[in-house]
Amino acid sequence: MKSKDIKIGSNRSFGIVFAIVFGIIAFWPITNDHEIRLWSLIVSLVFLILGILNSKLLNPLNKMWFKFGIFFGNFITPIIMGIIFFFVVTPTGLFMRFLGKDLIKLKKNDKKSYWIEKKDIKSTMKNQF
Image 1 (cartoon, rainbow, N blue to C red):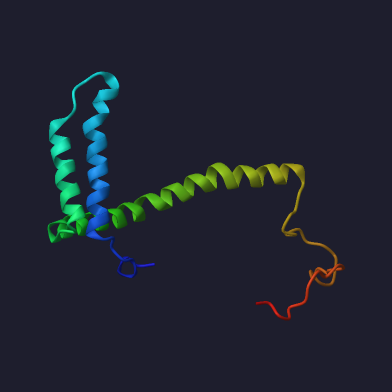
Image 2: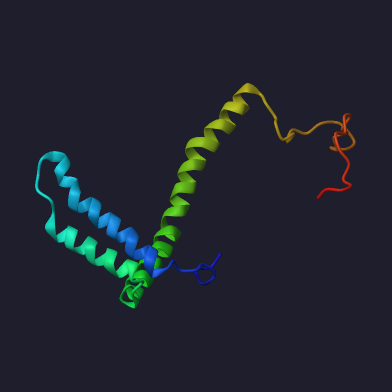
């Protein structure tokens, strides 16, 4: 899927999300008995007002955030998939090989065909939908 096929989010949702993020940043120090971060609270209110008004001022920021997300996704996705493969799929395959299992019937046999004959057919292919 190309980035041209993906629709950018609305300025309203972008503004509200960033208002929430900066609001969390503003009030987080309260959990450690510190003062509220005033700069973050002001930025949060600006994003909230612009988000509610669905302002065109958020359009360039929204586009930059969208492009950053596409770039970051193209960079991180192969890394995450590689980690999943090497830490989940590979050990599972090695464990199954250790147990002598051949779940997808890859071992060669002396049969004339690899066709698997089903004995208990549960349904027909008529009226599928």
